[in-house]
Image (cartoon, rainbow, N blue to C red; front, side):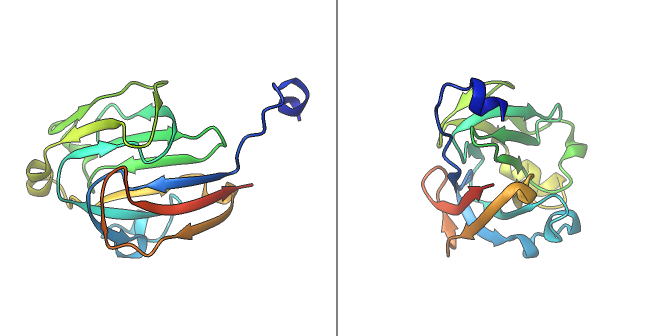
Length: 166
């Protein structure tokens, strides 16, 4: 209500497209080998089995949270969509080894902007899996989520999900 009263009259677009943050093979959320993600406990989304180690922003928005262990990053769109890009599974235990974060909390990002680099082989050899979940952490605030029918994805280019926020 206050936004309507005191905002600049600019209507925020409730629709947003989520692009692949990594190049590789698309993985259905149910097929991610981790029950927290596969059972959608953190929200709706998908995974990518990456072929290379550059993560780009899948949305236009702000960097909301850079995890101290560098294995995950939280992004937030202007319309309220919150997205978690989590590199690999059980990678928090690597304590940042093999990761290089390229952005800071509060930074504005566009689709395709590089946000993290990581060593794919190091993750493959030292973590449970290199499959990387991309999760809408506030799925409960969406009106609709439509998944594209994709297999191989290209970072910053392949549209994976259309979302409409409430």
